[in-house]
Length: 387
Image 1 (tube, rainbow, N blue to C red):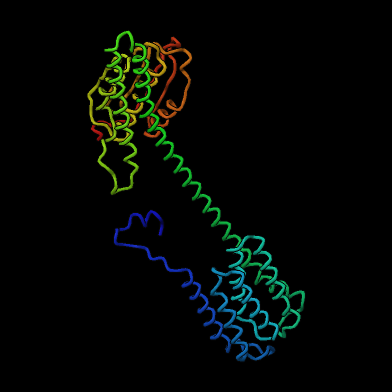
Image 2 (image 1 turned 90 degrees about the vertical axis):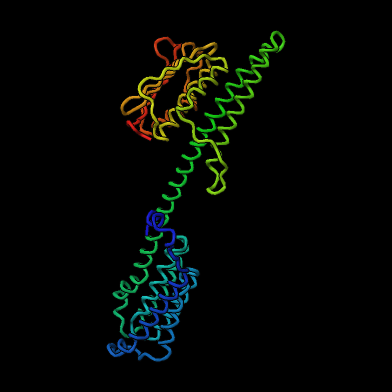
């Protein structure tokens, strides 16, 4: 069952994972049963081998039981199978399922041990197995018998190594995918915190500079600047708490404010103007509720654009245009007095571009005409009637 299938199953359906030892014990029992059941028939077919007696059956049982530890103790399991199988063949008993038990042990060490150790154990098994070539009454001539004898080690060894490499590659892919998901989540959180804290600190810095400048000459205006600092910090902390609250495990979340959207654009303008930057806001088209993901992106793009104006524009004015189209919403923020050295692309602009691209929109940013005029444009998909 796939992970997706498990996730989509009803809550009362649970996948029961049986312990590994249950499967190992079942395989050992099956191998022992087959070995004992076929021993009389094999004995009748072969006329040159030693007759199957209690010792032969005991060696078959021992080789089969050894496979029961193939996962927990693969090396010990193979050693037990090699001892029992090698003794069985060296005494001249007929070929049979006992060789399958040896092959299972070889496969297990190749599947579960490091390549060097697995190769050493497989080589030891091959040496022990080849001994019967020169003594077994039903064996082929020595050189001709080496190939089928070696195949009982080489084939399961190759299969075990191949299986281990496939599973290791799959595990690496899964780990890499999980790492990318974690990195993407971290980047999203970093962008949210940057937009919230950066906007609040820019407004606080602007008002603090005003308060310092007016503290002696116009203390009443300095008091207004300090009040603006208090409001800006409170709003930034509120948004930060809402963002971090969304990361709290389900069932332990506190009541937090909903994610911001364009319905709070007037509040954003007022905060920027309180920081000393006049904002000319124009909204055209028929305003409507946007898809939640698009609404947040639109707000964050305008917030970061205006934050850059506050941080980099000396006495600047900002013009914000929002147009609701039939299937999109277009955003434009223009600053007509940007400091020429402040037009580089940093984390904030990269974050805006990433947000817009994640919802399938287009984004452009840069000076326009005069190097002191900096324009941010974004077009976001928003089909009419979207919620």
